[in-house]
Image (cartoon, rainbow, N blue to C red):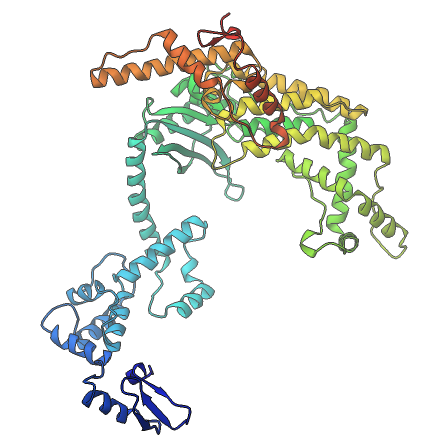
Length: 618
């Protein structure tokens, strides 16, 4: 209970059983009752007690009984009972008019306790505003977390919801499925509107096979700008009932684009893996100039070839041999060539070394005692920082790099544990032999050579960042880092030679691809400093100038203006934009680009005539 209002005007004295009026300083006996002081304030100082809140609430309810803002208790309870007895939950508002009126009510701080209970109960009934909000949140949770539609029917989930809000009745799986369909149609219509309003859309596609059902699916994702924010929407995963031939993939992709209202003018680029089928379908249907091979797939295939793992064919190619490929099948990043090692040939020195390391890691992963001993040797570290060995995964080359790096870090502890287990005669498990000092030295060089490629893999695997403009700078840095490394072991020299060949094979002329070159040039972080070839940077400036001129001409025609830049003005303007560059991250992979930027700054005011550097006037 709140304290009496009289204490705003009175206070206790030091005598303990007396209180004093702060206005007139008159003292009164105090025996746990404030009625004497209340009469004193009313009669002498004309101060009345404030009205009671419950009295005000009852008065407001009585004054509004003629309105329809509050349902009479009997009608509300009848509506609640009738809705609770229904066999299924309906998301649409199909209840009685009295229930609709009550469900539209929200919490009012001036309502009495009974009215608040009635309104709270009716809002959680089928069709109530709180019921609809909670059900929508339930749909979002199932969709975002990829949970089964039967989740609300599970006993643990029911108990959890009942503890939170007993008034909410969980929908059954059929009702939730129907609600999910309605929500999908609502959201897909919004996405279609956004796609129509977008200036251009980039599409990425992939094919995969579900391991349990052995069914193939074609996934399509759209990337576009909404204002200055990049939006990514998964348009869907479509079941491929036919064989994954070029003709079938062409018709499937075209149908999906038509369903979403995407025409050829709206689609700027189409990204896929290196499968010959999906590449042929995209090039023949949308044009070879719009296709880009996914750099993440290419880098992964390069890493697998370096560590000599048999590369698994792309999902779009598996089980489908297609002979009638398009004529224009050559691609600047063609990772469709599957180079499988001959099983009859001997493994190379690098693969032999990696096999030894993998055997040791496998032993630790299967031996509880070895893992416990390894962790005990790190007892000086906090438990969260104690490390275990990492196993290699065949489909991801970077897992092999992480296995090597972790093994090198724990090499001393691993050797001690293997020796302890081997000397223990009671142990049934026979541990493998530890690698020698020379092999460990070679392994360290392998890690250092693969480190730039691992960093590139981390960069291109970003999900929320644009990576097209990064491709040329990353390949240039990767090439430079590999060339500058000086290996001492035979394995290191062989690996360095092999990675150099792979880079030249896959990305030897990446700077000549218009999309890559223009994207890099327009990125304020890189501009022309990332180019290896002066000629290709000049060609990129010309291409960007042509694009700017086309856009300005279209804009001038739309506005009726005759202000059109000529070729020299456009080239000079573009060159002025790319003549300066900002610094980059301190990451090791970007050090080559930092040096190029510093050199560009030192040469910015030399060898120029008319705003055009002499290196571009050839």
